Amino acid sequence: MVLTSTHLSTYKNENRKGRTENIVLQNCITIKSVDEEIKMSYAFRLDTTDVRFFFRAEDQNIKEMWIGCIGKHMIKPGVLRSKSEEDALNGFN
Image (tube, helix red, strand yellow):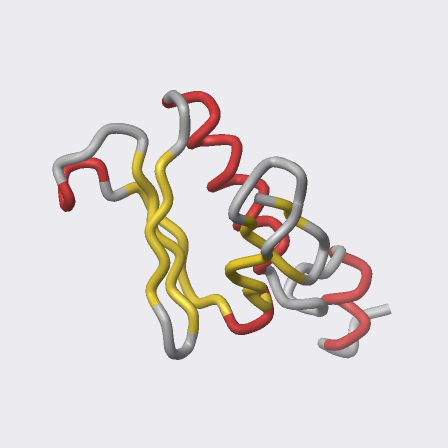
């Protein structure tokens, strides 16, 4: 898998040949652990507006890293604002 600031791409092999998916992160709704749900260790799910993707990491740490990194890129621009930006929007100077 290759994660950029806008897409998550999956490939048939490690040489990045034969891309199988090109997921637009802006279209993603949720990402979560699903070990118990699907009875498989180190599993996580990424939901987009129209497709649900399942992934399996090598271990718990790598799974948490993927969930965190993908989740960070799913945050829409403008969702996170500094206190000064919030104050300005609310009319406080």
